[in-house]
Image (cartoon, rainbow, N blue to C red):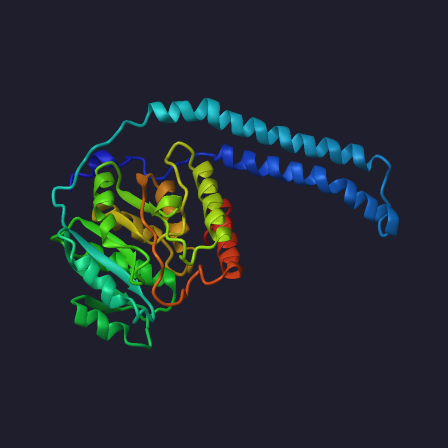
Length: 333
């Protein structure tokens, strides 16, 4: 595949995310301004710590400095740096030479859905093979996947990150296809969206599915309102960090189409020990190293069986979301 036109020769982006830091400074200053009078009243009333009468003046000054510093950083990135970045980014069109693709499905105790998922993807004319990466299931997942016609690979290291990483490895090994479609075996995503991915792949090395379009989501998915908007918020943090590199609204979806040539360079940069927040880590690392990414709106259906990942409940989703935010802001270690 002629992907050289899609790739930035200077892979790692050495830049300061002014917009992201500006947003954080603004939020910190605003929160400080709201809470300082309450904190002053508590300290003054309880006499736990002696506070000066100049407390309010000092906190007001500090909070305003943070707010204005945040606005200055954000404006600098949006109105000075961003127009320059946009001028340096041409519209790319580099279609794959071979349209057929390899589908890799992650699976863990998906006996209720794996057969339907495999048959759904195998029935698509562009799919050459379906590989199911089983992450130590203790039900009938493996048997049903094999009966449906899938190639089954066992990933013994437990965890979502290890399973996705192995799936991408297995996909890019196939030299007769240039594209790997990553998905889950729970029927929440369908093969009918492959044409959408194919329409975008000529413009990027990685096309990430987004579940944010309301009209394309079933009403009974495992994605609650909290998860829906929390995911959108983290996506916008990622966009602010890599402003000018794309529009991002969904950092948690597994469904994505990747050029194998990009995967061979990207996978060594990823850490499979990262668990449910691996998809956000994947996107952040790809953007940091200059890989081209696009979002594609996909349909999102009711899951067959119970969720075992970050969408299990709001409490679990909150913990995963906080780890995503920590990774985007500081480090993925």
